[in-house]
Length: 298
Picture 1 (cartoon, rainbow, N blue to C red):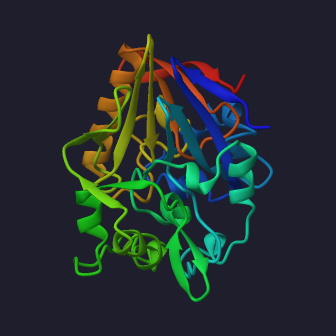
Picture 2 (tube, helix red, strand yellow; picture 1 turned 180 degrees about the vertical axis):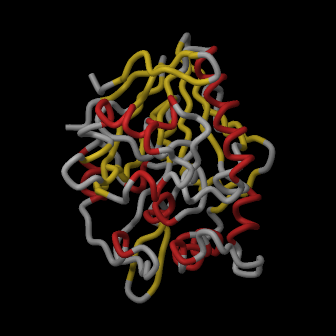
């Protein structure tokens, strides 16, 4: 079963690809002070941190948004059969993602729009699937929405991306170019409205073209933030960047701006990799933020 979270007239359904124990907190967040982690660790266990191994917990998941006749996917996970030599946990997977998507009531042909919040390996993998010896679009009737800044940053002709190049080896070739060749890729800049209640805004820092998806539906507000946050500790310590952020100063400024909007508008925040409670209501707490409620599927 894939129960939905209702956001006004928008139905949000999570499709889980896999859950992993990833890396120690101090590796994911290089600026993390031990005393800060000791303060927060108890409430992060067990969904977001595993005390037994000392590793963070992470979910790879896609969100289905149904609204006004559209079926929108937010990020497409890791994908099957992808060669990821720099990310062993993502290398040549064989998961039941498409079966889980169908169990949620969606076939690949149903999808009208695919949002890639950014072009990291764990956000674009199911853009394509292996057919014979080549990669073909998984969602043949969809428009794939990619920020122009991320397309330019990750294009093979661009300068090397030293911080995350190894972790994202082959990604552009197997998960972006086949979409473009099929005529399904749409690059956008500044902002993009999908329909009356769904819109994309740039949220740079993690990557130059990182984006958030804003939902305004009836009286409900929500924001799907991609990798603006990797772990709930970043709600309460918003200055923490992950080791994957390309521009640390810009990432901090963007995180604060988006979380301020969410707190002021009582908007649910949906991070890409959080399990357990899937979305958070937050409030301002001085210069930081407090989690006032977790939203679970009903």
